[in-house]
Image 1 (cartoon, rainbow, N blue to C red):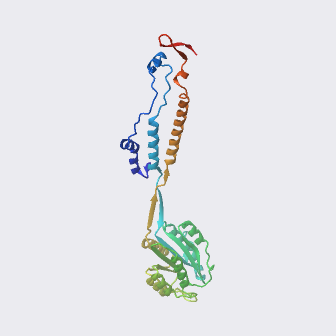
Image 2: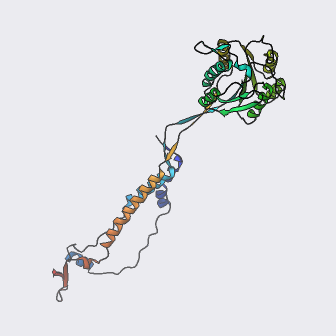
Image 3: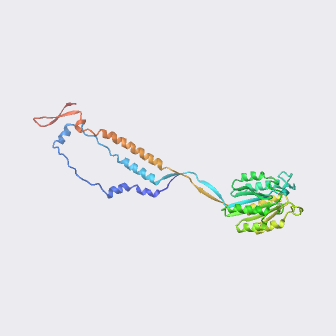
Length: 346
């Protein structure tokens, strides 16, 4: 499809004719030599010595002016539209890698007994692939939190890096509050309208310098919503029991919801519910690439002008001789009668 960037410049097309109409040429009669016998001279020559005429080719100037105006109008070829989706939400996942995640009380897709982290990888991995249009990041935590994946729209890469995590790789303890604090720092560099943090853990905070509820209060001040997911057995006792109360307080303070998953099925339902709560929204920006055609118009204009110059030069070569020089017969004046006669060939 062809479009024009400056269609209003088509008004320049009649400009030369308006100029000639408003500013007519000055007429003058230059001095000339009068030849009384000029008419007899041409009659005697039978018209064979008439000089060649140089054609003005007025249509050439018309075509060239039209092409110049067309170049100013700037014709453009519109290519197919190109669309790009701009994420409107940044979603950050916090995954617990403490030693308690090694307990084999969950099942995989085949129904086999697996550790908690393996089940989380499968469920969260499927959840990630549904977040098309969001920017997703991943933080893992144990003794300290670590940024595993910065915010990205490459969901496959995020899932691959999640699959590479191992229980205990960040330490055996649980720094839940510090993980929320690191997540807040990541959101400080985000300009997305919606910011959501989903934290999953199976224990209590045993290694943080910042209490989880205080970190959640800071997140709320920065418009970051926090959902918490507790997995495992809430009746577990010992060194690393599940702290349901803290997780509930963090979700309430962070403006999100608290969820509990005792098995794989409930964990899948939780992430399905979060997927409904945190609906995906994207801004679509589209544009049509334009290819300028005016250079080709200018090339055509120059080509026509060049051919016109060549034709003019060829005609000027035939105009350089006088009518008598171009004649093939000699004119003779009879001394008795004064008549002009053609005597013979040159």
